Length: 111
Length: 111
Image (cartoon, rainbow over all chains, first blue to last red; front, side):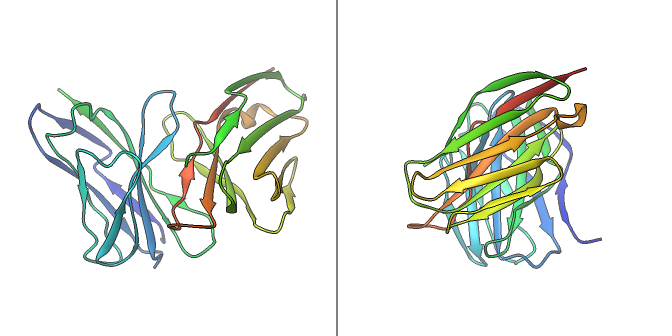
């Protein structure tokens, strides 16, 4: 099936650890996005990429890093510099002026 | 620049109508509307492009006033299934082609 796969669904991080969230798509979309959602809050843009090997910071990029080595993949690393990483993370893709498609999300908790 | 949504929350009885507004201080290329159920990924409703238009399907429709950079989502004769949080997303004409979202409007439909 065509779509976006985020993994894992649930992730636990210890203080001081880096963790990487996976986002894979087989829709052949050029643009990929990472959003963070806190309880009762909106979707805040972390990073986005319009083409392979290029990405841009969003509104809350501090403490996060990404790579876009392949069109299909846009992994997000939550570094130890992110002091409050507990949140729901959503990956999305789009092509041109069409709608964005979302993955099912990864819920990250600091333990 | 994140769009601003209003109201933040709405409580309706089944069968009543609702309007959710989305505004931006920037010139917009497109406005997207999504609905999210608790703990799930946002689901696409519709997209409106620059040029000012109105779209709709079933009992949900939307308009885009290009001059005012405002969009409104109209839900008529609301059903229980309409409950959830509604997000507008916008893409600005100038600058990077990134999709940013408002803070959301929580809609509760009671029997």
